Length: 151
Image 1 (tube, rainbow, N blue to C red):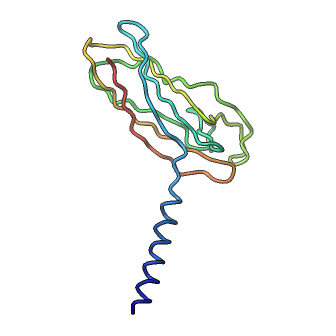
Image 2: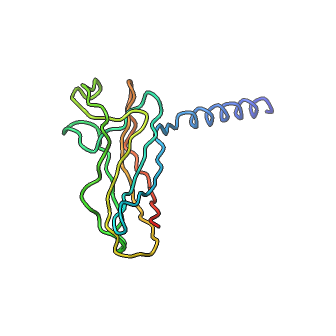
Image 3: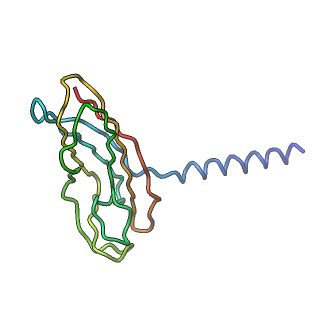
């Protein structure tokens, strides 16, 4: 009876370790805000990407991976100016999707300009949906909340 409990405990422990080891989060997001003028600011989202992984552009061909996309929650304190701009990245013949795709390695920066409608400090809530792949596999699309503090 005691031996069965020890074996069961060992099996459970190995299962828990195995499950937690398989949770991959190869992208970490951070934010900051740049003042452009008294009435214009730039919301900056920075993706730090683990070695060997690729974060895809906001513009990918049909049939390719899920494009990176940003949603900004309106709050009456600002107006969005234009679309979110992204850094240069690299365009390659992607072997996984068999097409030319732009992606980012190591780091990606995305910038959204806003026009202020108040002089008070406020926060902009946003979310980013993105997909990452390495040379062997792709992870399911992930959505992450972002917060920008405009002061």
